[in-house]
Amino acid sequence: MGEMTVLVADDHAPTRAAISAALSGHGFTVCAQCPNAETAIEAAFLLHPDVCLLDIRMPGGGIAAAARIATRLPECAIVMLTVSHDETDFFDSLRVGAAGYLLKDTDPQQLPLLVRAVIDGEGVLSPSLVARLIEEFRERGRRRRVALGSGRGVDLTSREWEVLDLLRQGLSTADIARRLFIAPVTVRTHVAAILRKLRAGSRDEAVQRVADLSHDTPDRFVG
Image (cartoon, rainbow, N blue to C red; front, top):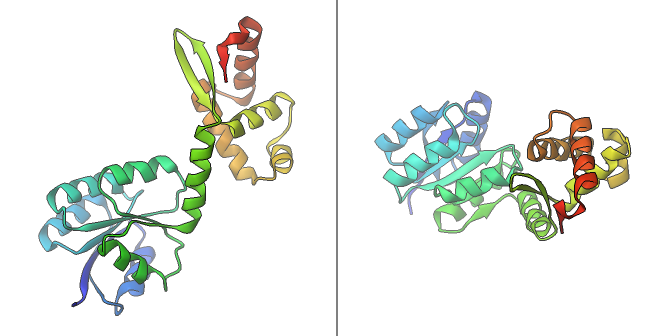
């Protein structure tokens, strides 16, 4: 089998260069390097690469580019590149036709093997993301629902409930991180999710909102 052609799209020029260098000379020829979704789509339609490596967060959106390319070139293997552990991005990528989902800090020596696996029809996912997705599915089975009125309800994961309970106790981000043995940035991620789900503008408002509901009708909380 001859060399496979690869399109690399990322708005960060050093990242494009590093990925291209990791693949070149290992059974791949980089046929295009693109800084945004629009140029990636145009180049893919023109060059018909065997595989496209697309940055999720590049201007124009990598997922949107993947959808366009997959529709027009179904034989092209699509791999998403990301710095995000967000499972929403992962599932959205799968829905539009991506067969690989790799973190940008993937070992460059492993990249040719992983891309080759995608071309051979295998689904490829960075190992650290596998653990994250397993945890997400576990959490889905342990969620509790909060009714917020007018028939609307939201689900909080068991971890979000733990964080919310510690917020009610007045603990800081650092204190919560120590108590739950997680990183402060992870605490902030959970807090952001809590605020979004409860439509609260601050931590205090989220705590007060749940307190008001519990004083109102206890059966608003559904296990």
